[in-house]
Amino acid sequence: MPESFVHLSLHSEYSIVDGIVRIKPLAAAVASAGMPAVAVTDQSNMFALVKFYRACQGAGVKPIVGVDCWVSSEDDPTQPTKLTLLCINNAGYLNLTELVSRGYTEGQHRGIPMLKKSWFTGQTEGLIALSGGRLGDVGLALLSENAELASSRLNEWCQLFPNNFYLELQRTGRENEEDYLHAAVELAIKHDVPVVATNEVRFISTEDFDAHEARVCIHDGRTLDDPRRPKLYSDQQYLRSAEEMVELFKDIPSAIENTIEIAKRCTVELTLGKNYLPDFPIPDGLTIEQFLEEESRKGLEKRLQQLFDVEADDYEEKCTEYYARLKIELDVINNMGFPGYFLIVADFIRWAKENDVPVGPGRG
Image (cartoon, rainbow, N blue to C red; front, top):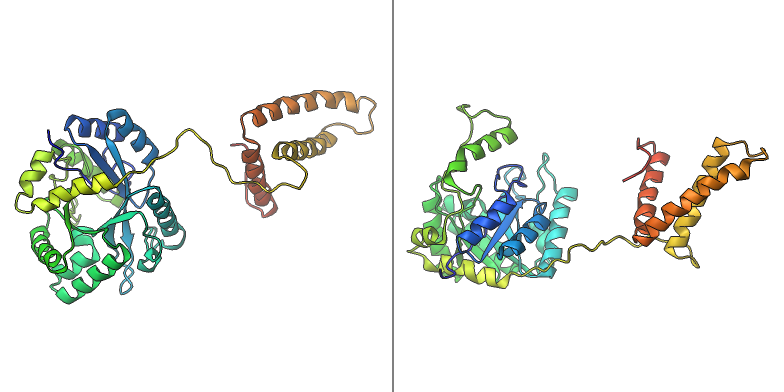
């Protein structure tokens, strides 16, 4: 089958708010459907990344790394807008991890991590942005029939993501989708901005819709029969085949073709199985292994003095067994290359104890 479509917007089970797509079945389904690649764009997180990367490699499918973000509005912080970010390369991956982390550390509003538009300045290298459809700030302006505001916002995004910003289109049977789509296509033609089709996938098959709705209710604290419950999803947000998507957007073929072009551009290479630890500061003249041994012996001496009578004739003899065991433990740690890890853990456990933060013995 020709490579005719790639899903670029998909929430897995790691999107706690609304996704039930499991990673391994996803990779198998994409491979079975003959699609060459797929993106996972979980809401405000990259928790599925390693599992997704490995599953796609095993299934012969290209993994596209991305995240769905909420961008806080300068006018109304309670009304964030949607933006999907996809990594072109490893530089984009690093920029995306920094943006997502900053959303959690600096941008949370009522427990929801959000990004500020100003944060994107100088942080968009290696990233492609999809507009978020009718939930993006451009989409909201179009639906309010404010063409001037929509054009202004579009120009801002195009400046932040030069040649890497796409107006996102969907046809999943939800409210205002067609009104938005026609307005967005007109805007795209006017400003010579590419469009791209997504299906905002939340489950693999249509039969999963009811299970998905239950998942949403669990997150929202509602029941399925609650008449006040907002119905934000449709049973069409499944992993449509390439043929279905081509038929769905046969009047806008470029929206389908651009999914393939984006997939071709996006290649992130991860090095798995290798540990990366911060460099723990150690005194001059010592290796990190020697410093760990020195610190460990100090700690053991302090505890032995509490355990045994230092003045007793057999004190040294009793301590011999403990020092022998310490040597065994240190040999294992150093041979595995983890002295820095134990020093780091010891450091924050020590800080916690000195600052009246309850902690356990400090293992793990």
